[in-house]
Image (tube, rainbow, N blue to C red; front, side):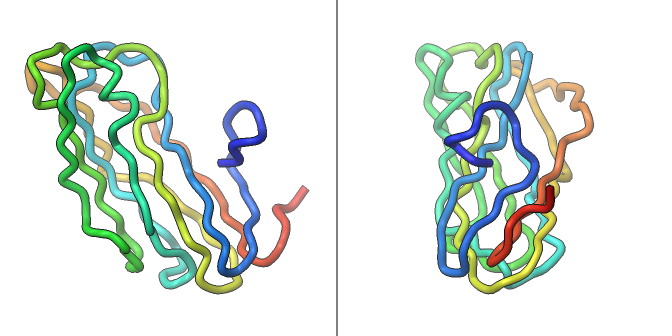
Length: 147
């Protein structure tokens, strides 16, 4: 969650009023052409989704044409649906990378647990792909992450 730190992190700290990015990453996938997930927050009203980029990993396939069918922005409820598909003639993307980037704004102080659910991946033939259990992360607004 911290773009200045290396590797995957599962906790970030931000000041009230601050904005920050959360990258949803995928690893070791073959022929990914579409995805959907719901980012769910435990503490509604603490964070607001103010930006989103799904034109990252899917767009790495040659000839890709990405369509974003996600919830409108800004989104301040506790469920943010993210849906994207490659409508181009290319096969899906393969490898590892950033599936989606959510830009969040910290509205008030508190602790937020964000988890992904209803994750669906599909290949270029429309066949659903197996999904490992997605990870979750903690966001501390107005206080540091615990050690």
